[in-house]
Length: 220
View 1 (cartoon, rainbow, N blue to C red):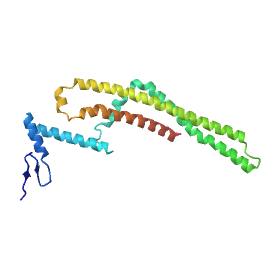
View 2: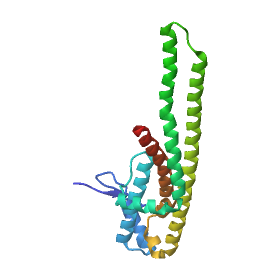
View 3: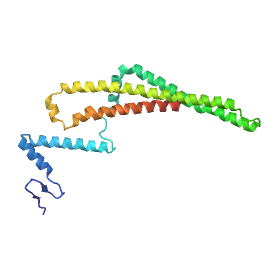
């Protein structure tokens, strides 16, 4: 036979060691004039939301996207005003990667100069070697400057796009009825407006740059 004991605060201990928090929530809901079943559903949503936030903070993926392809298409459509900046980013990435790929090929000429001088017995032509090394150094410096400029332009494109997205979200929240906001878990709307948009901005800024440079480097 299993017995249940409780103290004066309404906290009971069951066979699984629970604390009776659900009973407290139901009692509080009844005292506030809310139906118990509605309060129970709200508490469950808040618990799931809190668990998702804690898991995401620990590095564990949260909920999966319900329509990743559709969301991606809408995001790209929202970035149409930044097409000129995106074209410039692609062009800079193309030139930067091209210079980076050409660097080892030109550096190979310096190795040939050293080997010809040593094996031929007439000595190393240091003047020619210096010219090749300076050319390679210039290529790498130019590639680094173009890569920095690409990242700077991409950051501006992403942040301006996210600014428009935040404005659209704000307008949508203003159109929502108050009863919808009252039925949402605490902090859920705030998380969507701040954390989710920040995650999108960070993902775009990092993923787009890495994907573009990696693809061009592989092709080169």
